[in-house]
Length: 598
Ligand code: GTP
Image (cartoon, rainbow, N blue to C red):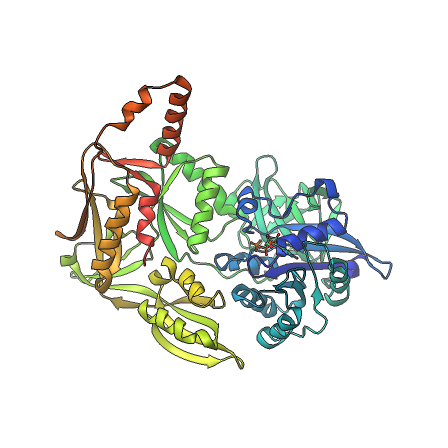
């Protein structure tokens, strides 16, 4: 029977341990893609993913594999991202699987996201197939890593597959283990339809296309379906699988992973995590959806060309469809005009959204520095929330300001505990507990201001622990802090989009740092530009950007025409990401300068 021959699995790994390369080898070995069509990292279909070598969005493909026992199997491989910001996407893909292949680098061993991701899989009761990859590397030590998987992760790794995804070693043994170890799906085929939406994307011709995992029942073209939470009814126009290009199928049945189109035009009807059932099935118990993810950080996105405001709104709406964690609402800035205040899961998420907007929707954007949400108690006994630092009221109206703290778990080999505590303490952390996980690993718990985490805490943590620390956190409570708003003045004018909030103890230092870095970033003009940092009316730091000695723009008007055209073109491209604020040209980088600390 067909269902017994289905295997649904994800690959989870720490970033760079070789997940995408291994997926490529699996596609090759199962003849899903002819070798000549093979492009590196085929599952990473977004340009952005290929360029950066990171996986952001999950992808599902169907593969056909003839096992050594002579039987033909259908594999559904669902790719997952490796970065903390996207653990939300990881849990989405895992919910559609019975098993997970855990890839660990044979030289690096178990690392931060190995733990975070494998625990998500264990929580979902998935069968885990450990793989030790990159055995071709001179520094590979598979036996040490095997022991680490057992001691640190707590999995039996005695028959972990040794692979080199790069050289194509061990991949067929892995396919055999997938058949043997990962259970087949077991949903009833003759029951009413019940399917989980784990991804969706907008297609101009077919409407919203849903990626679904069928838990029970069947679905085919012409069926009337209902999306349970949004209570919307549609007629199915097409079902199929990606292999990796879409292939239409007559039907999908319990255990299958595939896509469904039903001319769904209303983007908000097609929520990821919702359950699909048949239209006449009104008493279905919805599948457990996904935990709602709340944005952790907010920043302003502004088109460099103010006329593109509506294009930006449309683009954000489309992106939100397959990025449920993205939030946005309109805002305006004196310096930047009309834009949106957007909420993100973290800095990489913010970066990725900005880049997707620019590439996929052809927009040029200015992004302001990310900020957390502050709760402010005013002297008139009201409370307000401030998501944009420039909205922070005048100090005379403020009774107290509270900021969000997170409960952070930091897992680290015991030799680095000292370094972790020093960093956490400096970042205003409040020590909670410390427990030994095993002989050499410790779980240190701290309460830390979220604003400290979103700056560069993770990078600092990584560098002070040789990359071994794994950080995981959840939003905790708000606590009163001695915070002040620091304004930045360029050429005497306050630039609202450059304001930021800092702890009073660090205000002077931050004021000095930011004026110094703005001095480096902002291009010179033919007049001197004072750069100042202020708290209220009090200037706390000041520097000057010197004027040009001679007018270099005159150079453009001389020389041969080719060179002149090139220069002008270069200037034009450079200008794209600049915003004129008064008489000063402010490049994109300047708005992020506040993030850099020493
Ligand atoms: P994300 O998609 O960002 O999570 O990374 P990933 O885990 O998919 O890693 P990826 O497959 O992109 O591999 C990271 C790097 O390791 C690439 O430069 C690969 O060429 C290299 N790599 C992958 N497998 C092997 C291997 O078996 N041996 C060696 N020497 N290098 C490998």
